[in-house]
View 1 (spheres, rainbow, N blue to C red):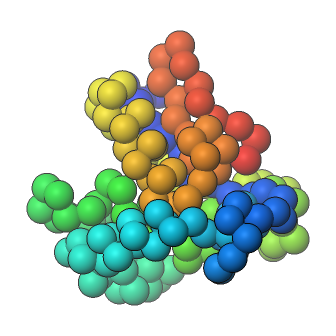
View 2: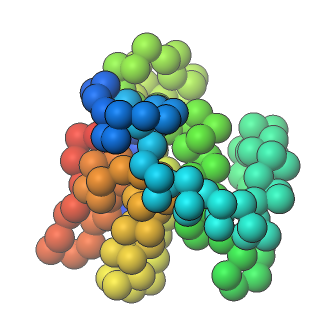
View 3: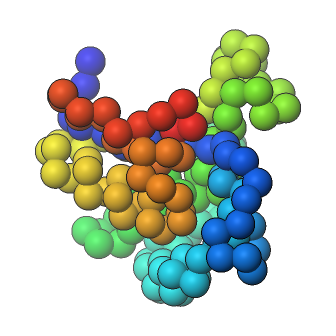
Length: 153
C-alpha cells in the first residue's frame, strides 16, 4: 500500500449542455465553459506544455517513463490531463479494446499520489477545474476517511 494520498482522473458522462454553446467536453458531453478556455490559455504557458507531445510519444514507446521537472512546471496538474487527453483514460464499456495486460471490461485511469491530505484535495480540485468537470465525478480524490469519487472517476 501507499502512504500517500491520491487523486484520480477518469472519464464518462451523458450528453447535455452546460452553457449551450462551444465545443463539447468529451468526458462529460457538456459544452466547455468560458472559464475552461481562460484556464487553458494559462495552462499553455506552463513549461510542461511544450513537452506534451514528446511525453505522450515516450509513454507510448516505453513501459516506464520518469519525468523530472522544476517545481511549478506543471508536472502534477498537467501530466495527468495530458495522459487522459491522449486516450489513456478509458471508461469501462466505452467500446474500446482493452490492452493485453488488462481484463475485458477494465477501466483505465490516472492516479496521482500526494504526500498530504490537503495536497491531494487541492490538486484534485485544480485538475477538475482545468478539465471543466465536477470534483468527485470524472476527477476525484481518496484520502483516509474520505472518498470524493464516483463510478465515473
